[in-house]
Length: 498
Image (cartoon, rainbow, N blue to C red; front, side):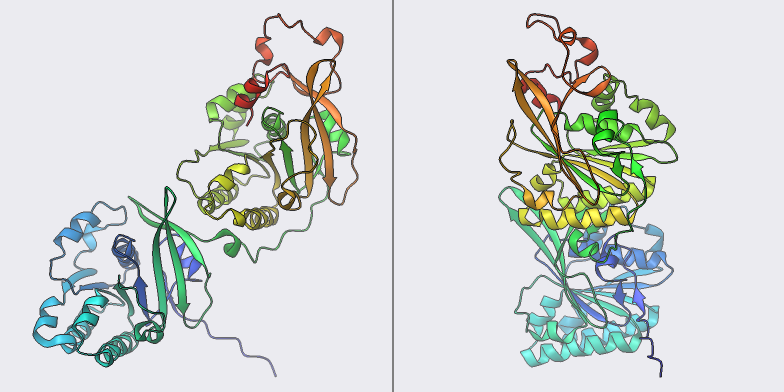
């Protein structure tokens, strides 16, 4: 006897980017939801955005308010939002007030008005703004429970999805939370000096959803939700390791790797400021072609500065950008949050079809986190997702130890990557030299001997400098190698290569 496939649940898409992902496809049709949050959390904007997304699909929505003031003030603010469609008001989206019905007939009058207007207009989405007003107007807790029960019954009978908005925080066991089909809470939190908006689905009958708190932003375009990375990518299955090697673009390093990086692998370059991490990354992406493009994602070097730096070591990024072999994304940290950044990285990889990705500054992800303990979980989820897309990844992580460190100090990060390179300084004949050691290459042989390297007008070159390559302490700088020559002072190196 074959097992019967479970019936698909009819969903109503919200049209809010990221929210349908969190809800595993959208809201349940004919279900009642509570959207709860403090004043200013974004309930009104979110519900209006859902309404206009609904009308864009040719359906009808109804917005019912229990407040005494008219909708004119709210409408003036909504007209500034990118999702607002004036031609849909009032034909597909109607705003009405139930305040007069509440005053004249109490809660039964509100129920009658709601049912009559929903039927008359054929609405399949109803927003009920002001549940806490109804609660205050109820003569008893029993009367309020009956009101919520009737609301839910009307929604199911009329086939309309009902969103109940409230700013009143009550115990999770309160009747309104136990009786409805779904409960979405908006949080507006402040951590030290940073403010963050978070969305959390506590409940949704009849299906799974992404649990936990998810970042969201409110812009002139409306609400955008960024599903929590470690939950969103939890089911990503890494692709089988591709056969073959990916060239570094550095002859000596490809030799140390016995032919280059394993394809679709992930590599961590770990080292102090000025050691040359970004320069290694420039060589790596320089091997991209329009047929096999690369993405450079960084937090410190602007595209213009990066192009100039690459040109000083013989790499023409401008031409690569022109031919479509490369895309550079510079993201100033500012008020960025890690989930937003990770989703942006993956979006750009998918959009460009990039097969090489260089992330310059993984430590910057930690700076964008409110809860820093999430970082290993986030990086692990990102690497699995990128491997499933067939991308070879190289990322950099800063280390405070100038010379060879006793330990990595971030073992939790190094274990996440297939390959780990350590850059460090050493003293030789009164000067600082740069050195590279390969700490691991997963499932592959490699040269474990530390190698000295320097940076010149041709880029990274392995091996010791000869006497002819040295210059007196009072000699003028070499313009061709001014970006990163190996002769920089530690302060200069730190400014040039984060």
